[in-house]
Image 1 (cartoon, helix red, strand yellow):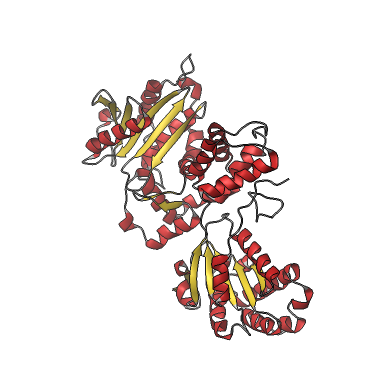
Image 2: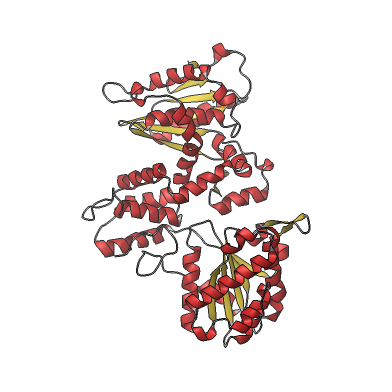
Amino acid sequence: MKTFNTAGPCVPGKHYMIPPKFSTFKKLIDAERYFILHAPRQTGKTTLMLQLMKHLNEEGKYIALYVNIEAAQPWRNKIAEVNQTIVNEFQLNAEIYLPKEIQPSPRTLEGSVNSFSTFLSRWCLELPKPLVVLMDEVDALIGDGLLSVLRQLRSGYNKRPNAFPHALCLIGLRDIRDYRIYSDASKRHILGGSAFNIKEKSILLKDFTFEEIKDLYAQHTTETGQTFTHPAIQQVYYLTHGQPWLVNALGRELAFDEQAIDWNEKVTKADVDNAAEILIQRRDVHLDQLADKLTEPRVANIIESILIGEENVEDFLNEDQQYLIDLGLIRKGTIGLEIANPIYREIIPRELTATRQEMLGINPQWYVKPDGKLDIEKLLDTYIEFYKQHSELITKRRTYTEAAHHLLFMAWLQRIVNGGGQISREYAAGLGRLDLCIEFAGERFAFELKLNSKFALAEGKKQLLDYLDRLGLDSGWLIIFNRGEIKEWDEVGKREAVNDRIEVIWM
């Protein structure tokens, strides 16, 4: 029986798969081009390239070989070892995927010591057909080792197709033009585009469309008879924005894991929301890897601005923005930079507040009324007192200092709401605020968080009213956080009703 795959390449016959599309690649290959395929991790690059290799070899016009060269990464700047490791990987993969009669001969291997390009030239001269090479994890290499590989490919380019690969695809997280490679030998950074200026085209592997998600889940329906409501598929697309790993992870959670829906029952939108919450809380490897990036300074700088809603794009290096986009963490939205999808949008603040939540010493049941409803007034009053006593949690934070107020308040809420509710968040660079909606025991409570400025109150009132109208709520809270050192502690926590719909809390 087929399953939704979340680990390693998809295998036809074992996994539900979107049919691969090869037309663009084949045009480039037929034209003897060298090109790039890039996309964030776990989006299907390896699956696609393995299928392309199989397709080309079955057609018989070319000899195609896929090779992952990540094993050379530990050698870093030891060029001879990098070259030898790559040659070894070519030899091994040729044994796995190609008939014995076209595998590299002992003469080719013996005559290619410490020279990756020599190996390719000698092998191509032996082959009865043009060679197509698909090299994965190229950007895993470092420094002079990476430069050596790129320059050898560039130097051999004029020998193709008889004495060098007819066509070549470099596969990685990023477009090669965005590489900044530090050379120990030259003591300077070198741009990847200058080291590999023979690139014809860069192809970004896109996320799934709504129709592709529908087709993928329909394969499960065909296999098992289990159906998905239209709102359920729409919610999968909304929560993931088509990110392939997330789409498959939700499918696996809904249909195969411990809390899966019985195959005799339809999967609903509520089921999808529950599955997403399980993924967020469990934090599988894919999500854990993304969360680990949040500590990098160039990541933190941009994520913090997105969290507080203030767009400081002029302070961001283009390469830093592109780095986060290539990681799949952010995208360019209609307002400004935003988190790539709602699941990541929920994971990031939870990850940044996870340790703090455990240190707060809160019993969620303190804030639940006898009827099971959330005592929102007690929650707010207690937070104000807590903040006055523990303001050092803001002032002494070493990372995400501009967002420290937002993060502490969210940690407080999350610790309480974990007892039986959920929080939804809206934030983006340029939005000017962070919006929160607590759902608990059938009730909803809306908050808008802003840093103090000359226009914070006026802007905040208008923004909160818009948010309340979108949610269909009568009232909510505007919380304005002080930016600098607090001098008038009596003013901290001041609550003021500005109209019948909005209460402002000054922090």
